[in-house]
Amino acid sequence: MPANHHPWLVHGSLALVTLAIAVASLCFGQYPLSLSAVGHTLVHLPPGEGVIGQIVWSVRLPRVVMALLAGGALGLCGATLQGVFQNPLVDPHIIGVTAGSAFGGTLAILLGVGSLLMMASTFFFGLVALGLIYALRRPAGAGQHAGADSVRDHSQRLLRRAGQPDAVPRRQRRDVTEHRFLAARQLRDRQLA
Image (cartoon, rainbow, N blue to C red; front, side, top):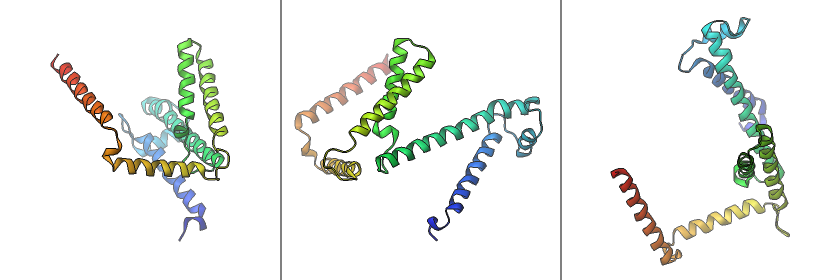
C-alpha cells in the first residue's frame, strides 16, 4: 500500500517515534531514571523539587526541547530551499548558506563586536550567500532542472576520470607522492620527539 494514500499513518508513526525518542532521552543519561520517575516528575507541580526534578526540569527537558526545535528548523530550512530551487539535492551546506554564515560570524569575532551584532552578522551573510546563489541558480537558457543535471554531469566526469589514472598529469602525481612522504616523515619525527 503506497504511503501517499494514507499520509496520516506515516505522519502519525513519525510523531510517535519522535515522542518515544524524546521520552527515552529524559530517562537515559549519566544518572539513569525510570520511566515512572520521569512521568511523576513531569506531572506533579511545582517543577524541579528534589534531585530527580532538577535533573529532568533543569538539564534533560531543555535539551530535548532544543533538539526538537533545532531539528525541526533544519528540516524546514532544507524543505524550503528544495522548494525554492526546485531541486531535491539542495541543502544549506551544499549551496553555501552555512559557509556564508560562518564567514559572517568569523568576521564579527575578528572585529570584536558584541554577541548580538555577531548573530546579526551571521544571519546577514547567510542571507547574502543565499541571495547570490538564488541569483545565479539558472544560467540563461538552462532548463528547469539545471542544478540536478549539472550535479549528475559532474559526478559522471569525476567517475570517468577516476577510472583513468593517466588523466592526471605525471607531474601532479609525483607532487602528491612527494607530499605523502613528506607528511609521513614529519609525523614520524613528531612521534620520536
